[in-house]
Image (cartoon, rainbow, N blue to C red):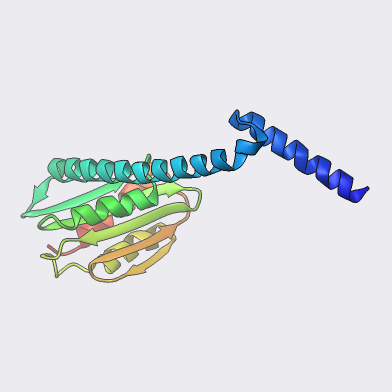
Amino acid sequence: GRALRDYQRVLRDVQQASAELSVGPDELGDAIARLRDENKEARRSLKATQGELAAFEAERLWRDAREEDGVRRIVMHLEDRTFEQARAIGSLLSSRPLTLTLLAVSDAKGTRLVCQRSEDMMQIDAAAVLSSAAKSLGGRGGGNAGQAQGGAPAHSHETILDALRKAAVAAPD
């Protein structure tokens, strides 16, 4: 009896999967392999597109940033980006001369922060800048002189931007 019920359940599952994929039960394996390959290609394409988007976003942010005493401080709360995208944008901006980037995103984990600086700004410690912003938001972070990341509880857009600006302005030129 158990073997029959198990067989009926498997048969139902195969029939349902075949119907969902519009193939016969004997073509189910090939259809699944095709879907797996299509999914892998779609992920590759999405990653490439996200990389291009990050490059365009980094270019726009750098171009639009005011230059003060030769330094560009890019301070943004990216409300419609993921933490990974913020890190990618920060990394791209760190390749620009005399640039300090302090970005935040809001997600299910709260407020996530990333700070990066260009190699020609050795006087700035990205970890200290990020730590200052994170601390004022009730969070913490870590990293090294060139790049750091951290997190804090959720806050309003204005509160996040205020904390980021204060930390970025306090950084030496």
